[in-house]
Length: 133
Image (cartoon, rainbow, N blue to C red; front, side, top):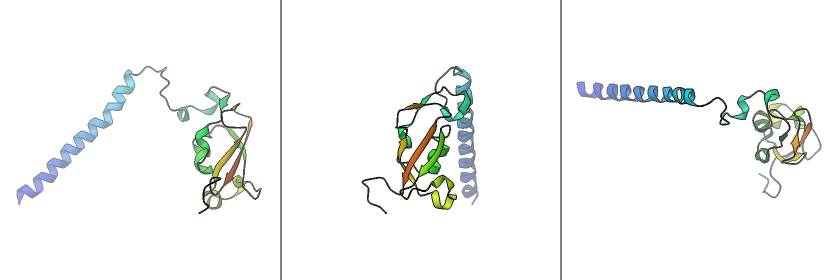
C-alpha cells in the first residue's frame, strides 16, 4: 500500500525538477547571447523602431485575414481587405470576417513599402483554384 503512494510522489518530484531546470536554461543562455544578435523575433520590436521600408511578406498569402493582421502584417498600413463582392471585410464583425483568407496583396509580395504606405488585401473564402468548401 505504501509503495502505491510513494511512486507517484517520486515521479512528481522528478518531473518538477526537470521542468524547473528547463525553465532556467533559456535565461542563462539569453544572458550569454550578445544583444546585437538578429535572432530576436521582429514582432518583439515596436513598429516605428523597425527598419523601413520593408518588403510585403509572401507568407501572408493563404493566411486568414485576422491572423495575418496580428502577425505578418501587424506593422503594415492595411487599409482595406476586399472580398469578391467588393465589400471591405475589415468593416465586418469578427464572426463574419474570420473565414476570409488572403489571396492577393497590393502592392505585390516582395515590394518594399514604408510603414505609412497603403496596403490593400484581396480576400476570399478559399484560395483560387481550390475547391470551395
